Length: 391
Image (cartoon, rainbow, N blue to C red; front, side):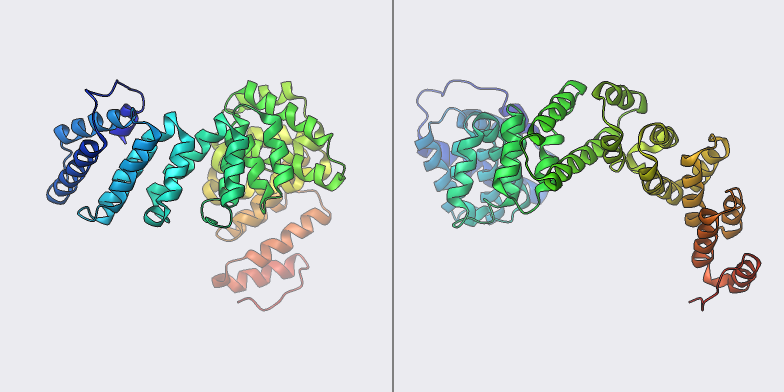
């Protein structure tokens, strides 16, 4: 990958009319030398890598007809092992994709019998198609439509999502239009492809503005809600791995409605929020509708408790009283009951007497460790819980 990344940033004029046959011969010789070296040593060979870099530089200067001839010769040369042919063709196509991604996609298609289901090859194809979509998304989309029957493994939903992501780099309106018009099987992945291109606050703001504009063009209320829900949930997932302060600053500027904020909150995950989890729960209490609070807090505190119940309990101890803390206490108690039921009971009893507290106590009983059946039975009798056989 080092050789490839260096090659794509450097270009020189072809040396003294290098011919296609000589280029093929050099590539084959180099591929054989690399394969032999890899069999005999785990250490990189600086000289071989340098030679590979020089060859890849020269590949960048071949015209489309020459590239096709070179790829065909490499693909069909059985003096190379299957793996060596795949690796050499993939390296060549990755170089081509930087300057001529449309040609790289076409050449990949012609070699699909050699490359199909190969992990690196799939990356090369996706990269080439994505680069093409950045330059000309409609042409890339037309290619998938024409090739859907002949090459379903290359021109399916994954390819369309790659094109949508590429289109989103330069034309957000077109990207959202594609999601609506292509009727892909998993439309949420299409929306995710767009939302995940927002790496900066400015980009995220542009995505949100274009999303709202697109929603105004949808006549079906259920479809509008699904688009907003999926898009904002994805934003929540992608934003929650940033610092809380950075994310909150953008949220204030974006002026999400309470309902929109609840969709955003549903994408939050402890695996991204980590040390800011408590602050996110407090943000939810101040921001999202009360009828959406419990389910969102449950998800976040449940994950936190499973991963670090000591830290979650410490936050609960100092958290201000309110609906968010009550929801968090219930979720924490139910989760921790599996391994520390007595601690769970203590937390449940901090809840006000009523339906929520009783539901929590019942759930604690249901999660009580089976190895301590006697204690579970005594607990159930004490709090009027109907007992059932414990596994």
